[in-house]
Image 1 (cartoon, protein in one colour):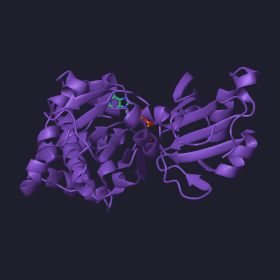
Image 2 (image 1 turned 30 degrees about the horizontal axis):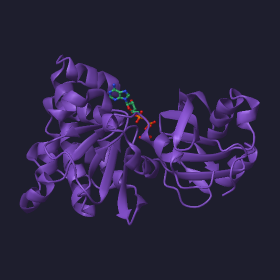
Image 3 (image 1 turned 180 degrees about the vertical axis):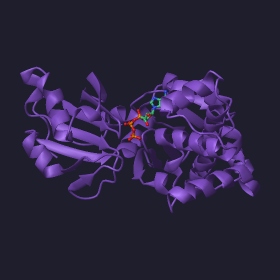
Image 4 (image 1 turned 90 degrees about the vertical axis):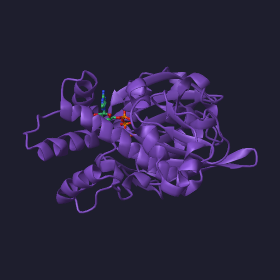
Length: 320
Ligand SMILES: Nc1ncnc2c1ncn2[C@@H]1O[C@H](COP(=O)(O)OP(=O)(O)OP(=O)(O)O)[C@@H](O)[C@H]1O
């Protein structure tokens, strides 16, 4: 990768709803700008708009690193929960960048973990520290998942698409919810309940179980009505959301042997850390039959930084 002319790195965290842009140098970033993706037709337009407000001396000869909510393999990238699609090579050329690195957004989030300040992670449950493999799971527009594996003094990033793995039920009530969701989609992935849209799906299913007509609610409406205690099905939707997340996070911990902990990212739960801490999340995380004792020793953290992927991109070991 070519270094930038002035040591600056353009970084961008592109989610299914929100895009965040900044300029990084020496592992830190500034000039943060957050916008809704919906304002632009293409990623090129969103990046070009950010670049135009930068002073000329900062915008020329830039190297760039982008974290995107999409599988990253090869030159052509297509976002999962958005219609944006682009060629890495063409984007680099059209924006006049000296280099462009594109990684999965949860790979960049994983890269941020060793750089998080104590104040940016909120412990949920009893164990407060651990050592070893780390798992990351994050409900936002979609459900991201990744792992960080220690390798000598370094880390190996593992980006996957675990949010699209099949969701399992652990109780009769969850089974009833899945039965209804299976009428909508033949494959019910974890993302169908563990995302903004997933909160609404849970609310609608709970209404249908009770035989009441659901209101047209946004994800933010569901959490607001849940936390105000004003709507029983919203309260239950939030509770099922946290319970399913505990189960999925526990599965990730078992799968990768995450003795270094599981980190919860994404733009939803950091707004509700107290309610999340008192939910069934941790009990469900540990509730893994004969392996409960193993889970009891694994810490779980909520990341309080809204875009840890930017910190990850600022620290990505590339030559800028
Ligand atoms: N107060 C809230 N309560 C519940 N959900 C919310 C709230 N505010 C926003 N959301 C939902 O959070 C989601 C956006 O999350 P986030 O900010 O992590 O977006 P993103 O980075 O674009 O997502 P992703 O990386 O998953 O593609 C949307 O589905 C939105 O409706």
